[in-house]
Length: 352
Image 1 (cartoon, rainbow, N blue to C red):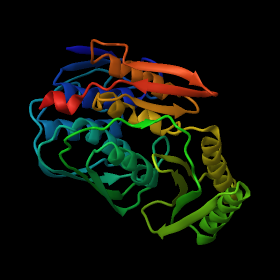
Image 2: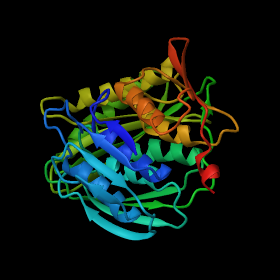
Image 3: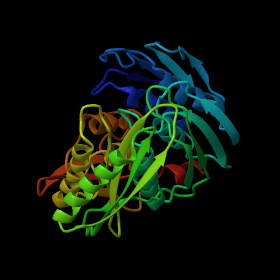
Image 4: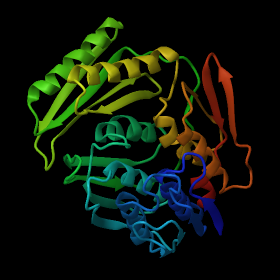
């Protein structure tokens, strides 16, 4: 059994979700204590519960303490079962965070798994749907991981009601992500989502972001996705591609904050990432780190990151709990950036 302190580092739901996913991957029982202990509302929240319950059902796992509000959980899986499933978070909890937990859990599936899920697609404290599709999943595909997604409808706080489908296909290899060279970014793409609000809000957000992008000598191609939903909401996701990688930024609209400000902040954030020389943005590194850890070891994964968040450092600590070799992560400074080098454990090859 592997014991995990759920209050370590940033002490959020990431520790819980990734601990369960790694339990499935390594076929190790985990005991997680002090779940989100330092948060205002500690314990398992509805979206955490849904993620773990989905993983439990698909992997035929045994659990103790799986209930909303619980501060301790033990989890041990039996066997991954392919097929099609439908679940409902029941709130505006993040569909994206649940899907990310499922992808990591079921990397070793031998057959296709389809998961249809209801909840929130664009909510606080999680990647937006458009970031998930256009940044995170594209990075996974660069690593050889076969995942498809389909958005059916958007869901916002507080009612949720969004719906999406995730398809996880068998993958034969996880390729290292080696991008330590300077990248060239020429164009910024984007999607502004908006529901149940005047469309001029999205137009103003678009205009402000494009203005900032052009001022920085980059091209812009930004679309507006106007729809209806159970709750009103809006947000913007921007990304830029080089030949080797993708950088992205996302931000939800906020009451009392102008559409122009939201557009400018998001554009400035992405432009800052581009100008820094980073090859993975500060949000993606946290999300992509486990796959770099699991990648084939014919060469290391190497990337340049502008800032290392508490989430990222906590993730490195957590991954290290599942292996004997604690020295596969190497972080050095390179031109005001963090150079992260990870010698993958060749997970899929070692499991065949």
